[in-house]
Image (tube, rainbow, N blue to C red; front, side):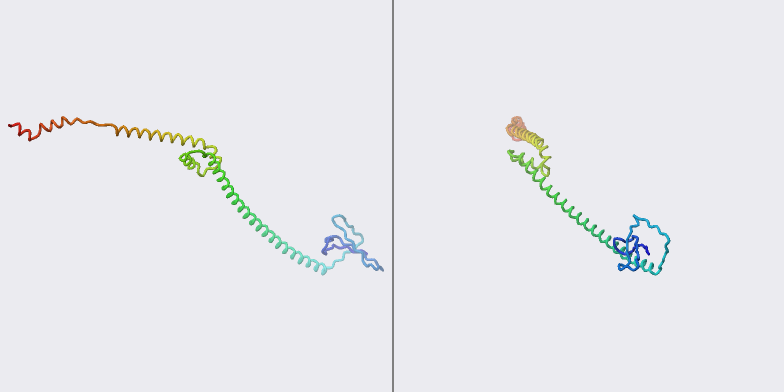
Length: 207
C-alpha cells in the first residue's frame, strides 16, 4: 500500500511529493521516497482520498506561525540592512567630501607655489622698481596667467616709466626757465613823475 502526500516539513524536500510504501512483514518498516513535482506528474488510479481536518489545521497553523515569524524576521533584517546601507553611504559621502576638500587645499597650495616659482624666475635680474610693479600686478594670478602675460606687463611698465621720466624732464626744464629769467622794469618815468608832482618842488619853484 502506498500513501502520497505533499511534504511540508523543513528541508530540501519541502513541497515535494512524499511517497510512502508500507511493506507487510518487513523489518525496515515503510519505504519513503520524494518526487519533485516540477519534474514528475503522478497519476492516481484506484485510490482513495483521506482527509484529516485536524491534522491539516495543525499543519496550516504551524505554517502560518512559521511564515509570520519568518516575515517579521525578514522585515527586520531588511530594515537593518537598509539602515546599515544608509549609514555606510553617509559615512562614505563624508569621507569623500573630506578627501575632496583636502585635495582642493593641496591643489591651491601647489598652484600658489608654481605661480611663485614662475614669477621668481621671470623677475630675476630686474631692478627693484620694476620687480615691485610686476609683483603687484601678478599677485594672486596662476602660473599659466603669469607666463602668458609677463612680457606684456613688463612692456607696459616700461612704457609708463618712459612717459613718467619724460614728464619729469619737461617739468624740470620749465622750472629752470622760470628761475633764470630776469625781469627789468623801467622806473625812470615813475621817478620823474614823482619829482614833478612833489609839493616841495612846487614851493621851491616860486622862488
